[in-house]
Length: 259
Image (cartoon, rainbow, N blue to C red; front, side, top):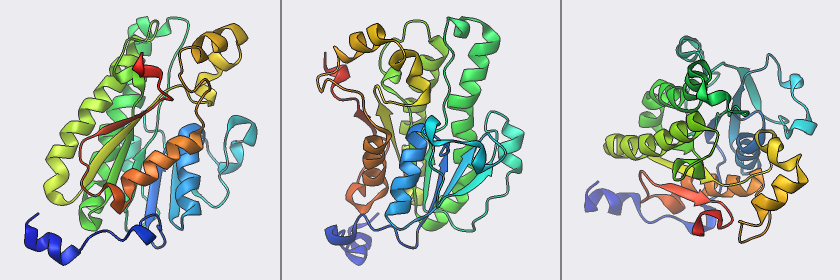
């Protein structure tokens, strides 16, 4: 972007930087957990928000699972199947923000078996690229924002979960690479690496008092994060406040990786 172009655009208006009225947002994995928190945050800020999930209907999700699909436009798409991603017909003609929040993890050392390893990589990494490619033309047209969800597992070892760690490391690298590749098209690609957040994927920790106490003892803030707190980071990255950020993955972990 030349200085003359920047002058034409003008500086961001801080008073309305978080107003997404008239914008269209798609959150892949927006049916529960962090993705759902992000979807609802954009809805509250005026956007028309679409959410992709794996179940047939929005009514198949419940509040007990951390799901609130009220006011969202829901569609079932199994992103682990690239053919399903390619065949999906979006219910919108314009897209301003794409959030790729899909993710899975398998416990009890299941990821040391190749079938499980491949399954986790398909959901966490391969589908991220597939969805990004699918919506690149729309984002180029709107000069929009793409936000990936990785994890602090992308920066450190995760004992017992080699596929999860590898896939999240891959998402961090993919964010950097797509950020550089697509910036000339006006697409800003950035990411978020959450720490320990209270969702259904972390029930293995929250359901065990001893395991939870041990985990929280390593978090300087002394508590788990909430999906709404990760949503704040997503809103910032999609807003004009982050207009000069490209290819970055912001860590939101309560200080867990400081030690």
